[in-house]
Image 1 (cartoon, rainbow, N blue to C red):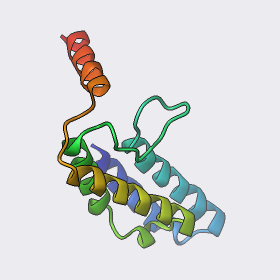
Image 2: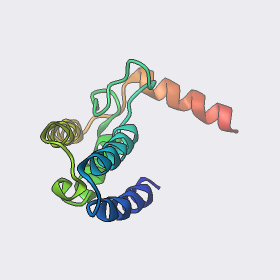
Image 3: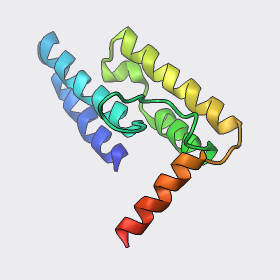
Image 4: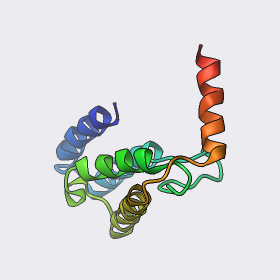
Length: 119
């Protein structure tokens, strides 16, 4: 789902590159925010995107693969700071995936609660 959204926004960014810098900057920010939401951990307020210490190795590996699947971030017209943040998220995901751990008890409890609500 997120890949489809990003592919759609990449097409927009390609078209935006023909436009002024402010328009490109605004479009790039929108795409960056989508990536941030895709990696969101916890509530949106006071959140920690790219924080994979409690999610378990399986979820961290999915996040790492998602980041790798992004086109070269340079083509997305991100700022240096945004590229650095994405690199940090990728490093955090790789570290968590390498630990080969299951999700924390609190995460498992929330997952079980969410499963009950959806039934």
